[in-house]
Image 1 (tube, rainbow, N blue to C red):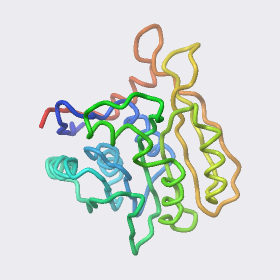
Image 2: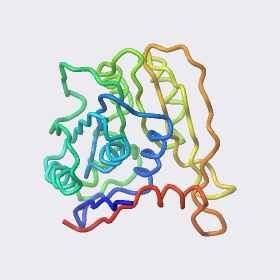
Image 3: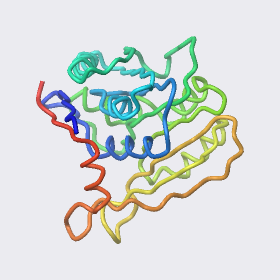
Length: 232
C-alpha cells in the first residue's frame, strides 16, 4: 500500500492520534461528494479522507497562514487535488454548501496554561474557535441532511449535546475513546446531521492501549494509515 508523506514544522503543534481516530471514524461512517476540513493544520484529515475516497471533492480551511504552505506541500507531494481556504472559520463565507464537514478543533479550556508559542496556542485552545461558534457556522454551511464529524474532549459532552440541539443539528452517532482499560473516556467522536430525526447510535468504545501496548484496534488504525512524517 502507498505510504503518504506529511511535512510538519519541527517546534510547533503537530498532529497526533486524534487525527487518525477522527479520520477512521469518518471513513467508517461514510463520506462522499463535497467535504470541507475545518482547521486543517497540515492537512492530514482531509488528505486521508480524499486518499481513501478518490471521488471526494476536498476543501481545506485553515486560519494560520504558516500552515497553508504545509497544506499545499502535502497536497502536491501526495498528488491530492483540493481547494484551500485561508480564513477564520468563524467569519468564513461560501456560496456553496457542503455535504460533509470534518474538524479536529482546538478544545483546551481557558484554565489550561497557555504557552508562548502562538502557533500551538491557536491550534490547541478553544478560545480561538469556541464550540458554539464552530457548531453554528457548521450548521450554516451544511446542505440539508448534511453531516458534521468532529472530535472533542469527553468532559465537554453535556455542552456538545446542548449546543447541537440549540443549533438544530442532531447527534446521530457517538463513540467514546479511552486511553486504557479502567480510565475515564478522554475523547468523543461525533457524527451530527442537519435536518434529520434519527435516534443516536452509541458505537462500541475504542480502547487505545491494552497491557501497555497498542490495542488491536489501534494497530489496525495505524496499519490502515501508512504515514511518513518529516520536518519541514
